[in-house]
Image 1 (cartoon, helix red, strand yellow):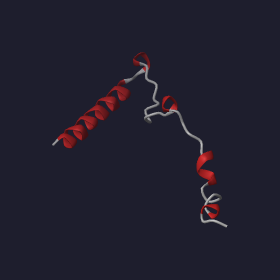
Image 2 (image 1 turned 90 degrees about the vertical axis):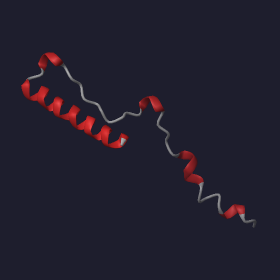
Image 3 (image 1 turned 135 degrees about the vertical axis):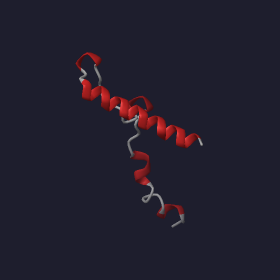
Image 4 (image 1 turned 180 degrees about the vertical axis):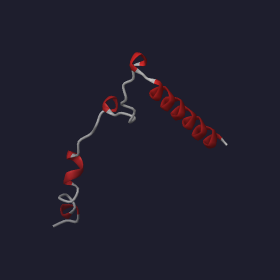
Length: 62
C-alpha cells in the first residue's frame, strides 16, 4: 500500500463543493428604492447614509 492511497479519501469532498458563479454573487446592497414613494424620513436616512459613506472613504484615503 503506497502513501498516496491513504490520502485519497481525505480530499474527496473538495471536488464536490458547489461553486457560485460571479454573476450570481451580490455585494449585499439588495435594496429597491423608488423616489416617488419616499417620504421625508427616507430622504433624511439616505442623506445620513451617504454622509457616513463619505466619512469612511475619506478616512481610508488618508
